[in-house]
Length: 383
Image (cartoon, one colour):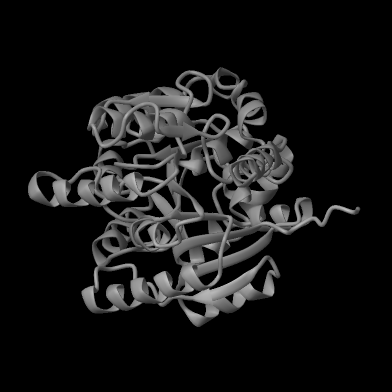
């Protein structure tokens, strides 16, 4: 008698569809092409992002109308909708990540008694909170973890922080491979020779002979824009130029970048899908973020052979290999960062100093190997 093979059903839940389109770029396509999983994707987000997600053809898309900011009434509606949906359509595995979805997904998942549930932790929005506010956010995480079958962290230092804060024990948390969630496309993020580097600078209208320091990603206080302002004020060498790439989160961040550019210390470029070209034409990547889950931008830079100078904070401890792919500094030690940058400008061996950066990335964060590790983890938990 022929055995009937039943397709396994998996449900991914995030707060905003943009997370599926950015954090899971390429990953969901890999799952589609390398498994027979029946995938459902639940999130909130704009119609533009939801339509983009549907066009990718990676699963059934459901709009749960999640909102990023706290909204008791809408959050309650989304939770009721989610409970009903997960109970009416049985899933073999439910995976939730990003803060709001982590909480609502774990609560709703508890009503789907037969499903296994996995929480994926990308970071802590309350990393630098104190007092009662921090305790409340910690209690949300504790509840989510308690209701989950497994809890996956995107970096070892992030997991260790949760253990140190006694939010979970060291037997519950898990790291996939060496950390990261989506890895790096090493065929796109690759080093270039000097001629190509100068060609890119000319194309982007950036100075040929300057020591270019790129700052890539969201531009806001948490990402260290105030620290960069102080750093820029301390760096008087005219050869040093900053290149800011990304979107502004507030008017203060916009003002700081405007001030730096008007002093002829830097340039601003809007977000570009070819961010690898920014790394390839730069000399140094500056990453003074105050908190991260992993800090994938640092390994993208390293894959291009560009070192990162960063604070020694949670998440960045894993994405910047001190002495191999860059340097880590004590939190907000601006003077030490300033001195290291100044020395780097006149160091004839600077490019060779971090020559092992790309090899380290290829060995640990090759995108397809990261995707395959996650897929095998999900299938193992289903089976």
